[in-house]
Image (cartoon, rainbow, N blue to C red; front, side, top):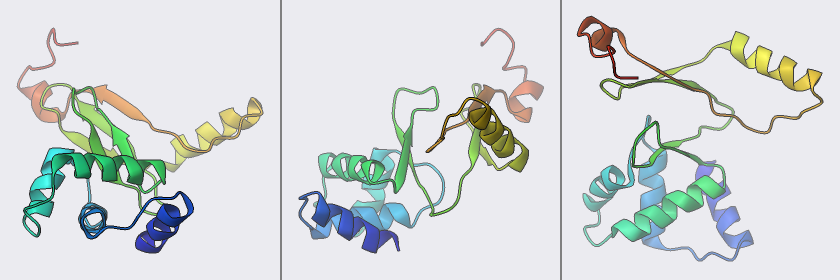
Length: 148
């Protein structure tokens, strides 16, 4: 589904198809979790060592624009990207100590957001919920003390 959608998006927006862009997109869409452009480049170069970082960045930005990827920084200097599976949504807990990213789904939060939006005559088209704090290990190791 994603490949067909991407092909249609590229055609309708005047982008050309290329084997490198397709290889990057296929590799990215096959992963789960979060990945940086540099990490994706390393994966793609296993199959095509001629792919460059600029092409990876451009492809990730394109995937983000057409709704197949989500770009976040998670309180970091570099962007992280994750595929957005059709019809799926999750939120994030981000540890400020070790950088661990935990994904979760909670229907009560989703319902509350819809309720608040309805009360304010607001139609949500997308949202990102990022909660920052400290994971169990960092709390046990005392890393949360004075690091906020």
